[in-house]
Length: 423
Image (cartoon, rainbow, N blue to C red; front, side, top):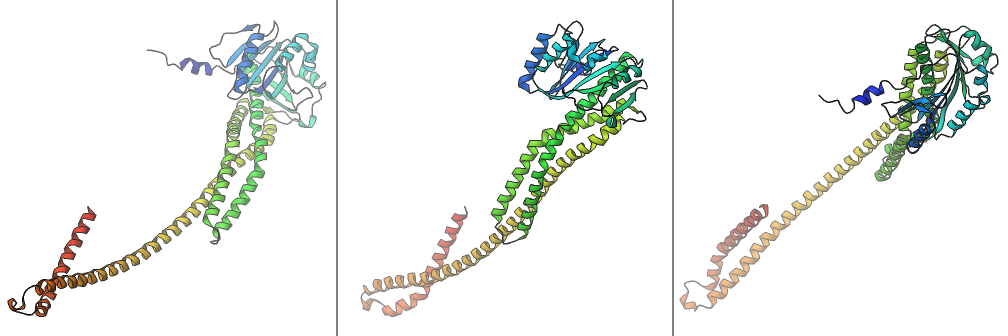
């Protein structure tokens, strides 16, 4: 038996997105980036060149190791973009508040800022021993108290954040381990970050959806106008069909422009819902809960994106239905015109047949007349004493036989001509 060529990749995929174990205390800095295909190779080369140690991995989409003796890193490539996470074990609250005071961390941050890509989310996290250490730090942070989110994960771990950007471009998150198992703590913090990362990526579709609504309003106005014009039989069908084709092309362009972003938003929204279910964050009295914060702001945005996608689809369907109705009307008119044309052709053919029959009758008379004239010339060349009857009598007796003979010969020739034309 041989291994399937994709077996190792499939197994490696199940072990991706796993962070190194998080010690306590610890500072975590993470960036989520949008990186195009051209810059992805440059990003990976820069990481491999700067890293002091890289752990062996089987999947090319993941790298982890050490940047310095005290700073560890984890990098992962996603379907669109990448994420880079720095971990500084033993970091103090002072380092969390002012990371530039640590020369080694400052150098790592400056290097990371030079990497290619556009930041979708950047977060600084401090892992405290317990609630008391975390609260002492919170007193020094300028957090929005009315929007401060706090909750407990797995019973012991507690989190605080207002999920707002600071002047340095980072969000702040404080986590109290409270004696939680290292593995549980690592998984909880990673899921918490994935929740925020997927949330931000999903929300990238909201501005696209909002920009699309004025175009959809205009498309809907044009569709209503076209429906009224189609109902007006005085309008030219070719003009209406051209206008409908232009509208359908515009809707197709909108679908193409927003399709990928809306599909990605839908996929990320499903991941956000999954992470919320996995975290099961318990609310803390006096603070906004993680579920409430996410659902109150996130779900309406996703509903807007879903409504935009549905509206584009509905407008395209309505435009197609109106176009089908117009084509049906055009086809009906063409069929009526064809029926009238066929009726006119039938009358013309019937008249032609009657004229042809008249001409055939006249032709029989004319040919008979000329043939009888030849007969007269023939008998005039014979001496009268040799003829039993006069020439006029002979011609008179031959009129009927000659006419019948000419008529029969022409009928036979006509049949042969029709038979040969059918073949």
